[in-house]
Structures are given as C-alpha cells and as structure tokens.
Image (cartoon, rainbow, N blue to C red; front, side, top):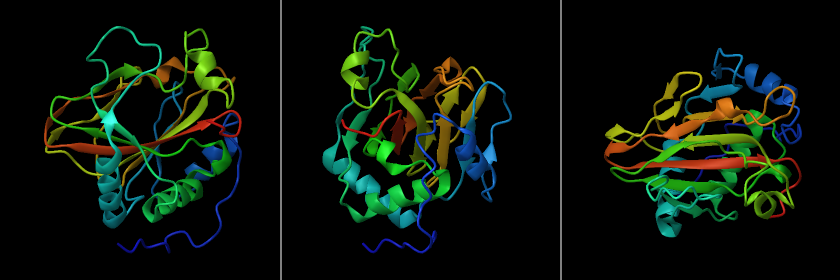
Amino acid sequence: MDIAMNTFPDDPPTLGNGLDPTPIITRLSATPGVQRLPSPKLTLFVKRDVLTPEICSALMTRIDAVRRPSTIADSNGDAAYRTSETGDLPADDPAVIETERRIAMLTGLSPEYGEPIQGQRYAVGQEFKQHTDYFEPKGLDYHQYCALSGNRTWTVMLYLNTPEAGGATRFKVVDKLIQPEPGKMVAWSNRRADGSTNPATLHQAMKVRAGVKYVITKWYRERPWLG
C-alpha cells in the first residue's frame, strides 16, 4: 500500500520533551483545525483527520499481526481492569514512519523522547478502566519503568476506526467524552504547570458495545527513550 507523505512538506520541528509545555501548546494552538479543551485542570487538544484512511487501514493490519493481551504496571488485582490487546508496531514500517512524522509535525515534540508507537485493539466488552498514563513515583514498578528515560510527559493517541457502538474515551475529572473517529488525534500533557504529575489526566477507554476499536498511542518521556 502506498502511503501519501505530502500533507506536511517541511521537516518536523524539535521542541523538546514537553516537560515545558509552552512551545508544544503554542504550536498546537496555532494549527488550523486543532481544538483545545477549555479547562484549567488539563491541557488537552483534539484534531480530526490527522491520518488518512489508507494509513489507518495499514496500521490496523499491523496491530492484528502483533497483538497480545494488554498488561499494566503496578497490578491492582482487578483482572478486568485492562482487557484489551496491545502490540508494539515496527519502526521501519512505512505507515508507522509516516504516522511518526505527522505526530512530530503537529505537536513539535522531539522524536528522541518518544516511546515506540503502540497499537491497541478493543473487542466487544473490552475496556481499560480509569487510569493515568504517567507512572506513580511511589509505585512498586516506578524504578523498573522510569530509571532510564524518566516519567511520561505527553500522550498522543490516534483513533483508527469507529466501532459500531461504545469505545469512547472519558476524562472524568473534566467531564469530557471523546468519541472515536478514524484519524482523530487526542494529545494531552500528563503534567501540571509546575511539572508535577497531573491526576486530572485520569481517563477511561470505555467498553466497546458492538464492533471493534483500534487506536495507537505514543508516549513521551523526560529523557531520551532508552527502553
């Protein structure tokens, strides 16, 4: 499948790891079609049609090839807490390369701070209950996941399709419900203005009631990604 690459003709900017959110916020706010959540509690942006249908289709195929049961850090004993499937996408795949480039162009987040893109698949009844994307500094697995590259700063999530029913993303603290649409991006800072982790980023991948939902997620760290 040919992946079109002419939407963003220039080289991506490199605006850092997002711990200082100002340049990222400035770039996203100046981009046509980007909507910012009007809340002082959470820095969150939405933009439709970031990915083409062809790229979305290619990424869903890649996810199906590598998906496995999802896991969580610091298990809470709830076997139904995260019931989706997950897969790490190959960095040398043309659809993944183009997706990385589009994320970098839109956000300005420097690629070296980013984790590899991860795909998620939700079948009927599957969900990811309320959680934050950053690692709890006092959590049992904090050192395991954050010793090399630090904690997460920003999350960029892209929906690849629209399930027949359900599958919305709910940010409870700010009373925001985001419906999945092919190619729609949701990007948010996992920090408060002072750099501390932000509990208002608490969100839930709600149950799919009919069909299947596919998304991809890219997280950014305080230091360059080393695994």
